[in-house]
Amino acid sequence: MKYNRRLSTNIFLIWSLLLTAQPEKNKIDEVIGLIDNVINWQNQQTDHIEKYTLTNWQFSSYYIGVMKAFKTIGNKNYQDFLCKVGENHKWETLPDMYHADKIAIGQIYIDLYKQKGGEELIKNIKWVLDANLLRNKPLPDVRYKDNPYKHEWWSWCDALFMAPPTFAKMYQITKEEKYLDYAIDYWLVTTDYLWDKKESLIYRDDRYFAKKTKSGKKIFWSRGNGWVIGGLVHMLEIIPKNHPKRYLLVDQFQKMSHRLLDLQERTSDGLWRSNLLDPGVFSYLNRKGDKFIQTADIDIPENSGSAFFCYGFLWGVNNDLLDPNLFQKPMIKAWEELSKHVNKHGRLGYVQPVGKDPKPYNSDSWHEFGTGAFLLAASEYINFLRKPVVKTEISYKKQTLIYENKFSSVSDLKDWVLEGDAEVLIKDDWLEMYSTDQKAHHVFWCPKELPANFIAEWDLQNLNPQAGLCIVFFAAKGINGKDIMHSSQKKRTGVFSQYTKSDLNNYHISYYANNPKKPNRPFAHIRKNKGFVTVQYGERGIAAKSTLVHKIQLVKKENHISMAIDGREIINWKDDGEKYGPAYEEGKFAFRQMQWSHFRYRNLRVWNIK
Image (tube, rainbow, N blue to C red; front, side):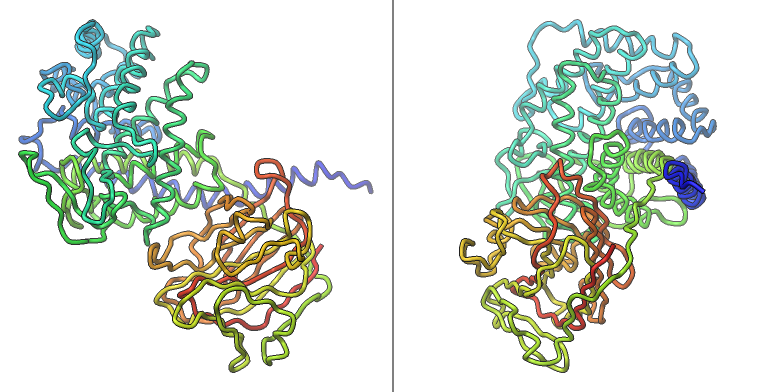
């Protein structure tokens, strides 16, 4: 009987999808239930109605989340609720028609018009937007400080969530490009002024240009940047792919997302803090704006900003603007942690109240806009779950045991090479490695060159859970193709850049990360060197405070790499040989520790695989 490879592959893929479909369906049902609980709770709250009014930005941003939930789930109760809001307010905006916050409600009116029709739904908002377009003078002035007309222009970053998507949506229903041109051009006026090119983040307004925390960090407000990432999503959903200025907003979206990913990695729980660059520090202007206040450190998440960032990551992955290798695990982590902060009644906590900078709040703090941001993230998460990702397993068979080291005697360390000021010793049938007085990072090279296809296993135990970082290098060779110990290679002393940005090619995986500057990092990751290029964020590695004995497994089959801890896979990545250069094959293997680390190793075994 002739073997039909294509038929076999198709059957495997179909079977994989069937196995994946039911768990994803269960997850979707759970999220739908959570959305319903959150909306039902929020719709019962009346605390803020009198103060903010039901069509101002505080509530409009909630309605935008409800509309996203309706579009995603199709629950007509949500649409009916939004229609009731419009009917009760005669489909009108608040006075002050140039104020971005007052026209955000127009996004709901326009969406409902698209869904149900009725010119009365958009008559007022179209008149308001047209009035904005008719202003030829003065030219936009997006200064906030000392500007009596600051609210007539988009002079604060929140405005980019409120106003530009409203204009863009009007373009969608009228096909009149003047609305989209206005939205994009005036968006760029604001971001050209408030965007920090070095940080790839945006200031809330120009009053914060020179403000810094006591530790010297610039002040970038979580929710302020959240408004912008949300606004970017809503603009990019509408701007045609061939629009000559679309790339400018794509560039902002990608740069901000990568910066936020870097900041997320510095947290212990995968959620962002109100003060993005100085987490836990509240730094804010008083009501008059003439005094700057800083309070003691309180390391708690800020969930309105976190929900927006989670939403942005999800949308970017779902729409092929963000690399899932980098963003998929972090966005799922953010979603899972956000969900934990929704109580049984449906209230999302840790939401900073109305403000303009990082101000104090607590676990009981909630607000409509925080709920709206959460609904955006929840709905986009459902969109992610509806496109199940078939996990690519590494299939292999162990062959010959090509290296074994129990680390039970000093002779077992023969031909191993230590780089960096550290101690290696055999004690109680373990290899212990540490730097006396925590002076230096260090690397310990195995003498055996490992083939392109191998599986390596070893036991590991942390003897100093206060701080440390463990890395494994593999497939390491000189960039000239020589052995890493060849005389042509530069001298190495444990300094990280000597292994990642000098004359070595290799892969490395961080599988325990508890750096004092990044304690209890929420992700493992794999990097490709030379270049120190992060190619995948994975699951959390070994828990920061764990002193258990862990079993580590590293598999490399040609260009496919996987790492597991106690049977739990934390990395699964394929090097396509194109994006980051040719995939690496055979090479040397090493254990690396940062200066604070004190670990012990035993039972290192390596097999050929096929």
